[in-house]
Length: 186
Image (cartoon, rainbow, N blue to C red; front, side, top):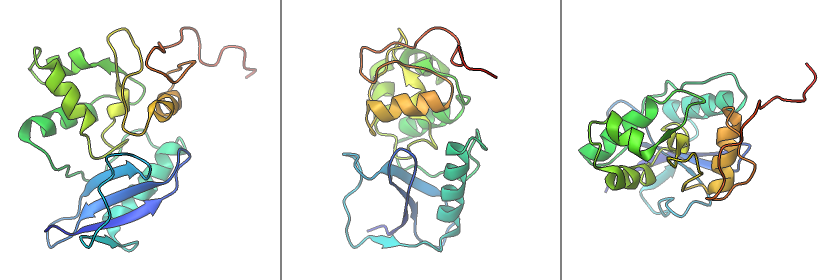
């Protein structure tokens, strides 16, 4: 049984659990979930709260800086556990720039598997490191909001943080047109 070190942190969108695989190897972030997510691994003896973990402290700091608008790209080392295919999809997600969104079809093309859209969508849905591996940047081909483990209201908020505006937080919502800062005095 693998042991996980974890740290719960507050974010503007609710508390999150950051997790790193314990052991002798180099420390890397292996998980980031909102505490109310259905896919948050259940607590058990393999979980150790470790606020002194350097990788968890670094991840918490970067997450705070990202939410604070001081960081656009994470540098904490990541080690998501998954199949080779899933890891390829997750690596492609990391390469999507802050503020950009793409469709599942485009993501499939980027990994060289244009006909594997459903499999790519499945891998996106199994992303164990929310926000750091930005699965929230994947939208429908018509710009509609699509699933997100933390819920569509959070996905909408994450996209708004990156300058993408949706007027509602449901699957029928399409990206709003117009200047995000329209009408603001500057």
